[in-house]
Length: 98
Image (cartoon, rainbow, N blue to C red; front, side):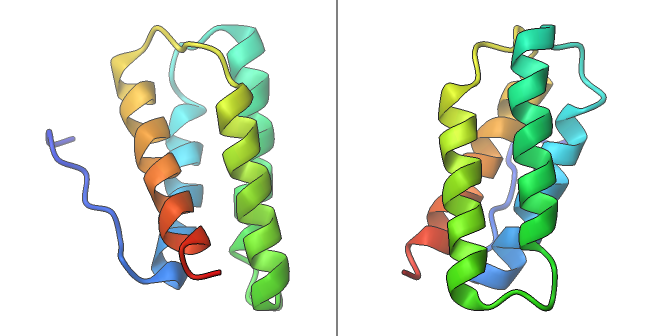
């Protein structure tokens, strides 16, 4: 992984990247309580990538992900933190389109 994570500027691509970044946290050694928040955020993010969702529902899912990420505690893992920060930035891209 390079130092700079590129964040898509197009909302559709940002939703896909959001799910990818949260999936990447699943393999990281994070505390169980934090892992539960991240796992829930990952599941909702994957749901947001579904092609049969309308834009309003997709944005609702991304808002849910953003809320879950705000609730997550520290990970104590630099790689997980970078993926979480990238996921937060992806949420901002999608939600800016509201």
